[in-house]
Image 1: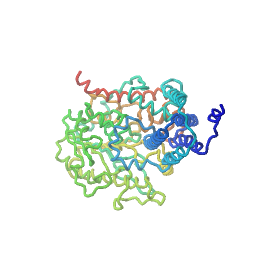
Image 2: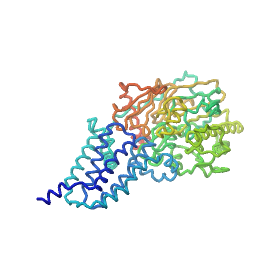
Image 3: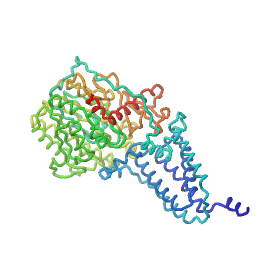
Image 4: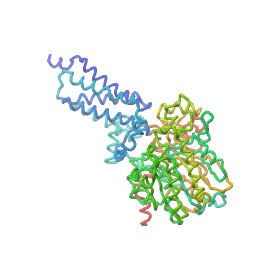
Length: 600
């Protein structure tokens, strides 16, 4: 009896206290770095309890050491992923790991020194476990059962209607990852959202803009990381984008200033996909990779049916994002990648923009007209570092060496390169008969980066939030036409196809699409996913940003112009519609809907 009591009530040794502190501090630090505020204390206590029970459940020393190491690495990956994508890392992203080497600079940009705090306790814990001399009993099964029950409550609770359990199950570290694995392997927890009807393509043939560009060549230029905040703005008296500013003021130009990126895991490739197909890229890995064998009837195919030649041009490796497979699948007759260009020097990811445009126009001269040319620029890629001879903006001391300062000089160069493109088109005799559409693919300066947020909030004079980060310009220039408009209806990448179709005189769109014609739509509606949690959306004057736990009531809404908070009452149906359209797009891709329609 005495031995039993001594075994049961043995005082806790110093190394056991070290182990306990590590297990308690780890989740506290993790949720802090994840920027999770909802149910923070409950999440912290739950995960700490799980870790303590887990460590108490094994007799063999190496088991908790190995698992703690794996947990720590996964937590580090989660906070790194969250810093860019605003969410937990998912199993579905593993299929994209082959591209990690190509985006090393982005990963380095995202990782913050403080993230490594999640790893510094590893040697301390290992030493403490080794030095802990107290006997470890083999009777551990009750603790294992308790651990399983606790996790099961959160995992199952995440798919119930009990708000607290659902929130906890969606945010707690162990619960999230277990549920994610189950969802990927068995479909557990995947809710079927009521299908949303896509928008109809509406035209107004009495509209002076309808058909105004019919029969003309079309050049669509997707500019790398072009954000809207640089348009019509100066940096201490220095105009940042004079070429684009003058183009916006020119006759024949329509400027959409309330236009937004609509991308998922594929970033640049998702922007291309949404623009050409009016569908949202998949959140399950990269659309260009997993759906490259699908049937598509986007802008390239629709224009080919009208007698257009189609050509895509990008100065990078054609295998990246599977472009060499995906461009032909989408209907491009020709794809010119890095092997088709001769750069005088390699800058960043490849050929400088002005050389890319000059050589691209040489290809266009030989391309039968009318043509659709889809160009993807390259120079303005993170980390935006420019050679001295290419810099035109003299930065203030406080911005020298910052990503913001680098971005300004990079985008200023890219703006001047657009002027080179226009000049080359004029020299080639192509300008007058060519519609030029220019837009940004995605943000360049992440709002989740604290340094960016502080610097840009100061520069812009208003909070640098998601909506400002996601705002990109869309500029459509039709030479020789006596029009000049700025349109502020909310739109996004998915709206490009039906909008440009209006200008090209399409009376109907014989395909599937989820965007709307911004010339005839009564109101704007921009669905968001990945960088903003599922259920987020942007309307003409407000944004609703879903909470990370997926609970509508925990989300926030604010005005686009001032950042002032607004009530979320009455917005749930729009949030549900955003979810529904995202799911509908995913369903179309998974079912290869266009191939199915073609067979019928």
